[in-house]
Length: 329
Image 1 (cartoon, rainbow, N blue to C red):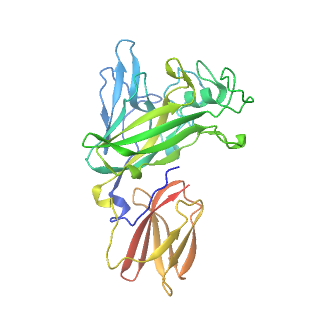
Image 2: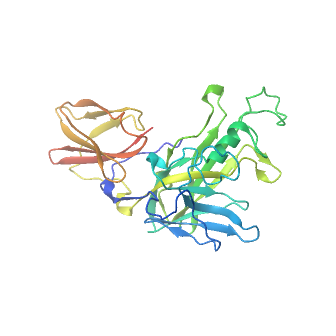
Image 3: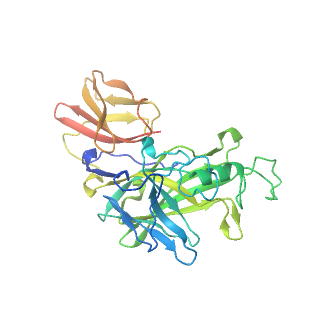
């Protein structure tokens, strides 16, 4: 898990840009395909795409799609998300392929020196069921057969990880964001999981970047590399403009403590003695999703109705105001 130092943002959430891929035109039950390796664009980024002319197939990169097949668990269903739909039941989303050579899942931001706020991810149907049940060269995750590990069946510590790297002026940054699409390393096997719903990946720790690249790693390695399918899906690719990066310092800043952050269902807000405030919670598009008045110095705000993701908490008291980025698990 990546722990972030969350500060006071210098601008409202409306300055974020979300690519939800819904405006990309597709026929029913299909996907993006071009035999010239032509990259494609959204309102905030360019997504690379690679076609292998020798074998006449999609090699690597990103393809937007509306495929919704969750019953075909084989390699003939490369594009379908295990959820059957995009995030929040949307039609379009993106499937990513690492390909055979690797280092091809690259995204260039439309405006340089922005921050990638993050995006939602899940497994493909093909990838999920291969890890769950085994298939082809891929081993059933947790299975100890042929591992020579000496562990009891079901106890092999398998994992499948997405790593995200940031680049600025062509130079790779030191920080890395890691997200496990499957993790069987827990002492308690009941905690083992393979992701089968949309999960938010926070990338703000990468800071200001020109582009990002993604790379997949796995415990299931064979002679030719990773055995389990090297595909995953993304949705709601979100960037923040430079004005939203950094910490605001001004004399009208409202002093308040907000915890825990990240949170599960509720936030605790503690202000100066005698203070009252009006609060608004905004999603990453700037839409107000919760509003209430706090009549006490200490208050608990119930946000259990919100979906997991990034939000912005605005608090106003007289001429004092502050905005905090909050994350709901």
